[in-house]
Length: 420
Image (cartoon, rainbow, N blue to C red; front, side, top):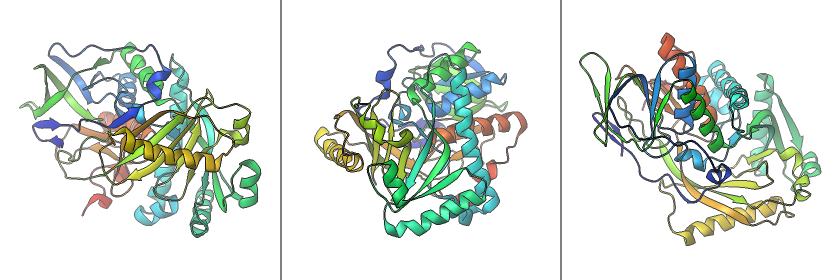
């Protein structure tokens, strides 16, 4: 599986179960399959969060783009995205400093925070309501043993200018019906409906001249004698592009110029029925909630009063197909939800298992292929996939227009932390 020279091969299934987000938008634009040969400045392979953000950014800057989506817009990992937008990462800032140095680590975290704000700005410009809501996050110590590390992270964030607070156990229990030994409160996070957001960006991009083709499977990629890229589809049509962006979520295991195997796991998520709004009053400011344990549990609310909970990652890439086995994990999520919020009693109405990818150094893959000029990757591995997609659209726009972006040394494919 993966993207191979001359041939493109993709995984078949990224999720199983009953997804919530597609039910929140009854009417959305559909796009026809590619039915003729075309030429374009930038061809984007993938119509999920990364592909739509790149198309939106490039087309708005006067670069003509076309998206080729094998299935439907927002139909892959985007539909299984739980819509938490946080600038803190799976790897703590204090740990990232030890990995890549203070200046680079702080720059990366700052770019993540800026990306959350930029998502909000874009959301406000779209015709459809993406349900973007600024939130703070409660990042609590899962055990007493994690408390010193959490305090160190708080001090690191605060000393480097991030808007954070630290809550002791009494403060946590005053605001929530559960008690933990300590928590960082990060301000500047948000929540969003990823399905509506992607469709909104896709419509905005096409209104500005972008072309989108659903049910268009790219099966080969070849370089032409004049330095262009020739993409052939399963239907026999050809796209000739000056540059190509692979925005295919968690699907490739091999990049064209360099073998980089991510860690692909499966995760689980569920969404309750609408809760009694009085019971949600015990959820302080509808904060996003997550923890220091790995794999971690996370929770958020929705605009219509539901609760989304996820976690229980397992070290296998294929989503669980059997309903009985999936239900065992979902029941565990319900137990964890009621352990935190005993007053919440609405049952789950949606539940799913999905592929979840992490890179070996906890950073996304964004940048130009070292061995193939004009081929770019926008692969947001990790829990901050939507934030990484926003960051990627800025980076790739700069690379295509100017040939450089300062974050490339951190997230590019030639970064030292990827070298074995």
